[in-house]
Image 1: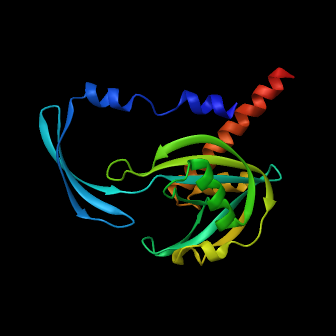
Image 2: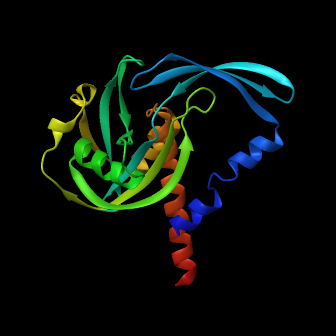
Image 3: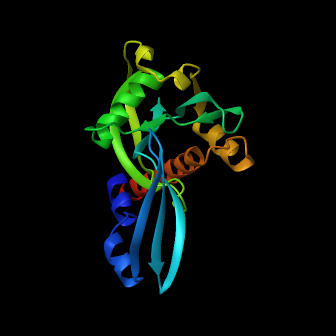
Length: 206
């Protein structure tokens, strides 16, 4: 059922959409290059020239790890840009040579210490107005504990702690503003909706 849901809302025909809008890239200038890079593009859209600063970010993965069918595993992590600890789903960038699924398995082992069965549900741009990052979202089930892989974490991941929360509680926090990370809010609410649809379909089949 999840796979059908993904196909229905899949991102498709992007080149065709750009062609119909008469978009032409005129120039691009690299301003900074690193793990996250910055460039300035000049492009023509509907006969108007626009300049835009673009952050280049590797594609990434996000995970909704399900425990016992009723709980989600989150991580709390200090985010310096927000100057606070945030509650988030496990997530991270796709390394060179990795598929989204391989990256999701690695991130799950490194951040929460679990392995499991992955089901792709969605993909989305996190900030398409200025950022190239495309995130692939997976639901992880049949979780099993693996050895401690914290030595593979980045420096800013050393402060990660794992927290289990009931799905119903997580939904309330998303709606009430208790969870402020947008990818986490979107992933939790999408999973909740898909789970409800699956239950409805199962009930009708029975």
